[in-house]
Amino acid sequence: AGVLAAHKITASSPDTDLPTVSGLRKMGVNFTVSNKDTVKSSDVLFLAVKPPIIPFILEEVGPDIEARHILVSCAAGVTISSIEKKLSTFCPTPKVIRCMTNTPVIVREGATVYATGTHADVEDGKLLEQLMASVGFCTEVEEDLIDAVTGLSGSGPAYAFTALDALADGGVKMGLPRRLAVRLGAQALLGAAKMLLESEQHPGQLKDNVCSPGGATIHALHFLESGGFRSLLINAVEASCIRTRELQHLADQEKISPAAIKKTLLDKVKLESPSLSVASASKVSLFTSKSKKN
Amino acid sequence: GVALGAWPRLAMEASELWGGAVGAGRMAGGLVRGLLQAGKVPASNILASAPSDKNLDAWRELGCRTTHCNLEVVHRSTLVFLATKPHILPGVLEEIRPAVGSHHIVVSLVAGVTIQTLQRLLPPWTKVLRIMPNLPCVVQAGAMVFSRGSNAGDEEAALLKSLLSSCGLCEEVPESYIDIHTGLSGSGVAYVYLFAEALAEGAVKMGMPGALASRIAAQTLLGAAKMLLETGEHPAKLRGDVCTPGGTTIYALHQLEKGALRATVMDAVEAATNRACDMAKD
Image (cartoon, rainbow over all chains, first blue to last red; front, side, top):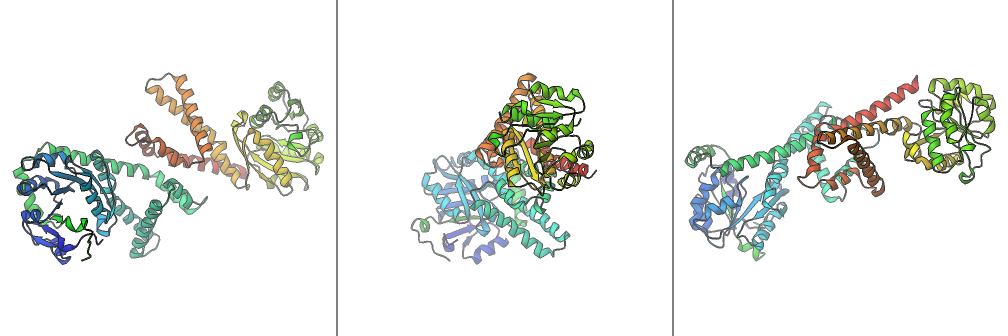
């Protein structure tokens, strides 16, 4: 999005063999195996590790956190208060922001919300908002809504992928080649979403606008209604939200011994591909608005 | 029973018109009651016919004139409402045919009988219109649609519309919509009664006395319908307006969606419409 120059970004990961690492390197991001180095050279720290690992990262980098640092956690189900509590031994007033985004940030159509912690200023939140707005929609919310956001737009792309797969199947059944079916299905959802976002009208009204009397669409919609389409979607959002809360609850209770997590997870994670990197960004380039494209 | 409607010599201006829908049947009765309530017609200008007195008593109580002679109705009036049961109509039409002139306006309330059939059974110059009302015409909150036959012109359509608008919503439509109207609104009234009953039952389960629950249920439906009609907003938007995040309404709506209420209602309208079509073919 041209918001931040790549050389001002540092990413770290213990495992340099991950495909994401070479991907980041190719973009010109500075790479290091030392989380501590990352912290030292950055102002805004995105913690992009899996939720159970957050406590360990915080322990590791805690001593190096200074007043200028803004910690942004994207970890699902990890509360601001749990992070602040963990850091309290190192830093009296850590600036913590909790964020929930989704995968389409990759194509700059992400949906992101954030909630600011006790010691984060308004401008800290605005900084994050500026960053995340460059990759999609970003707005501030109360922390207690973040689980609902997870259920809706966090998991949402999965619901959409499932729908698209099925729509494509429908197309194929009726004679379309698969690639074309996928392309058309995706475009239909993209177009519909765009219409809704750009319109003042209620989605119900937009739906009506497509349904000519006795036509093809209304016949199809009847099938969707008969199958309880709407309630399935409501159920999905609800289930994802509730599960997020469950996981958070389990984490808060620290039911699993930290040592056990550390061993099994770190081993396991080395075998998996994404998300064991701590990426961070320099604050300076943003404030001076010298946003250079790489 | 057989019944015909009548008016004395008809003036084409609604304001000068004295008359009412007649038919000893329930539907025609509803229309007449609505017209009388709206003050469009003095009861004494309505002549109703039926073979037995049983049906006609109610009309007499309203102040209408009655007779057992269908032909008398046709002779004495210009605007003639047909409100018989479907299987009786052909016989009645044959009976009155000789007396039907080009000045007559024949309006059929008979379910399932098409304009084509009516025109076939009446003299070729007859102005025919077909109407499908619903029961709440009785309380002047009806929904009616009508279509015109080949000889019925703008004047006749305008007259009918102006008369019947006193009973509620009255719209001219292509004849193909009439069966759909049956499924939506003719039978639809019953769906609403069912819904109201269920609402009240839910309240009773939660501890409210039945009579109170029923009245509140009815008022809720009335109020919601009124808001729909008066705001002109899309129902989905009005629904959203009532749903505070995480509140009672959205929880309840989820239950309705789980029960596929929408599809069930669509099924009901479809079933009634198809049945109307099938019955018309008989």
